[in-house]
Image (tube, rainbow, N blue to C red; front, side, top):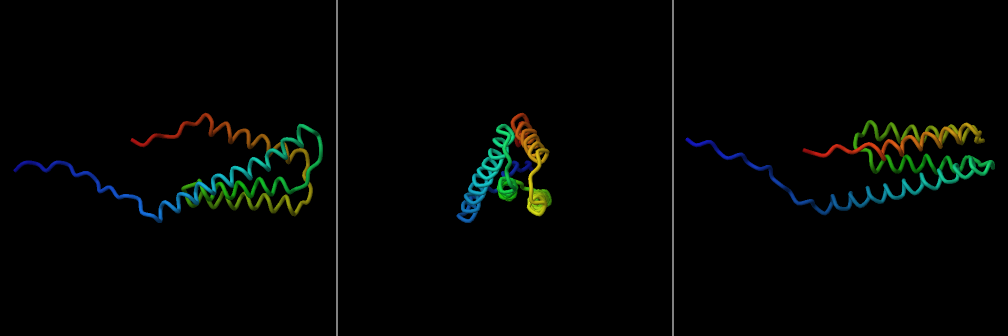
Length: 127
């Protein structure tokens, strides 16, 4: 008796449903990133220009974080934690009603740290 050769796993072609889901993920990534950028840009310009802003840029920013996390984060526990945290922070700032200088600084530096993490962290390649 000769040993059987190893079998390759079955490869399936992606069906039409997964293509539509992938397009919605890409759309969510684009919209979320655009909202994050718009909110961040307003906060950054208010820091550098020294003028006051209201809570609307923060609502745009945290709304973008929620949309982006829904499209990008694979782990459901982490995904809904990020979405919940972003919406909670937006709600707290909306309830507080004004933006202080340290609010803008925290948002600015935390965004810089997250962007630097994604810039310098190489994703693991599947083996």
